[in-house]
Length: 108
Image 1 (cartoon, rainbow, N blue to C red):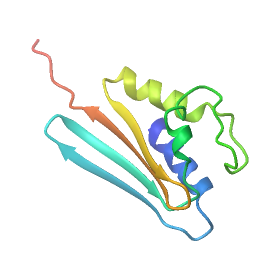
Image 2: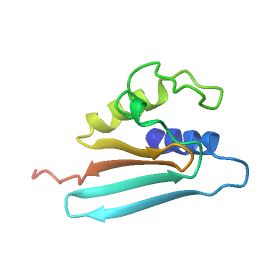
Image 3: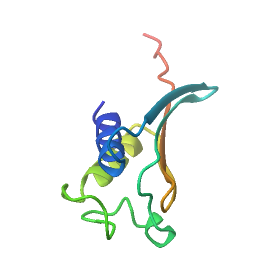
Image 4: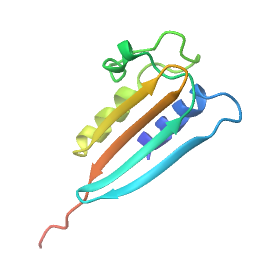
């Protein structure tokens, strides 16, 4: 829940007032994928490889935040055996996708 909340907050902050933010969940054979899509300011390609580092703040990003939200989100997803990725283009927005594996019941 914290990961989704963080990604939604970031998407709303990056988007202009009245812009849509799309959230999708898609079942996959090995788990589920969640996408948060905005049409906000986007991220320059030179920062995409650094976006999950602690205290990373993209220049010209909307004000606020500590630069830890994406780092924490990635660590949570990683700890659950998932993956957090980003695709973005300046002026066109961003898509953050995180996948989580299916939970398997253990035999008693």
